[in-house]
Length: 569
Image (cartoon, rainbow, N blue to C red; front, top):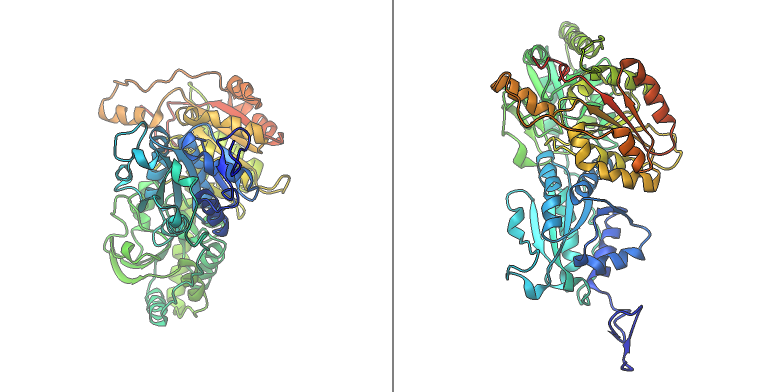
């Protein structure tokens, strides 16, 4: 061995001085730290070994190894929803990036900040159809931005840019492809880049004046609250504005936890299964104040709401304003700041109008309460999933964190689970199957051991659960306190329901042959219960909550009672 080289753990010799040199991998990790990243989800690949090696010596960043790249992406997506910062997912090239694409798509549809880092083929192989090569164009039309790091001197710049783009404007996914040889090269550039300090744009007094005037003239206003109010300032500002101006609150798709569902101002949830009669009542509003919501397709019922009703739309990204409805006022501003400022304004509502408005609030609250009330239902082919949701609410008082997967079973959750003030809901607006378990893992990781916080629950159908059930190994290894509830009706229920509508009596390819879910859980070292009768539901859930680590409760549910609103036949 030459005198001017160093061998480390049988690795190839490294020139003297290189050990102290700032490599691109070191700059990469340092920039993550300076942007507040304390956790990332990955499935290790040979294309980013240099990054893993630096992370090994960086205890400030928790590296969570998942069993599938799609699950890693979902967990990062859920982490972003919990923290309000970009979630980080790191995968290898080709197959790894393709598997993670489901989370990129979900982040785009759900306006959630996500940074996907893809270990790329070496620079000398780029553009040559190399083994497992994937190009930036694979993410066209889905990601907000895609960059390929070719110059190690730009590492800090591009890492910081990816995070900034993911979090700014309408949040979404950003993708950074890093050739494996670049990570080990010396960074001759400026090094790590700090997170910039950003001040929220000032809210124009004239906009507040006009909004207050429009509210003062309305008999039946409706405040539609969206995801950009999920931060620590959003919920208090929402409550304060509603009380100050006597405004009923309807939440956008999968944002049911923005306000205590038993609050007198809570009027309902705009999602796929909002009852037609309730949507029609919302349609009687004479002013819609939409704050922190993009007014996406599901929330608006296919862009039919608010229709021709006067609309005040408040959202940080000007590009999302005036895309639907008839805006009387569009405001590009911080939603929480806008509501907080509005709460400081005197309402200016005449007494006779105030009386009508309070009657309107009462009417909406009564409709929502009647819709949410659980009335036992029975079927010959299994347990009505509403009974499971009702027991869940009774055991927790609505103060729990629920990560919902995708499927018809969610209608029971959204209809009958009343979230309390400490309750939280994690859902993906694109409704991708497989989200529930990884999201619950991300949530449980954010809980300190024995912190006394609300229990973490994943609710999944049998189809969605089996897509990411391998992540139980992560929950078991870390002894994460979470309960997974599996709604097992032996069918891809949503598709089966659609088949019965389009081709009555001709189901095909939607029946599922399932394992014994309790034994599957036990194979991972996780206690499991199989529930086949309604009488077994509550004791099984209580036993699962008593566990200090993960637990699985599989309930044989009715396919006939396929949703909370309709029977299969």
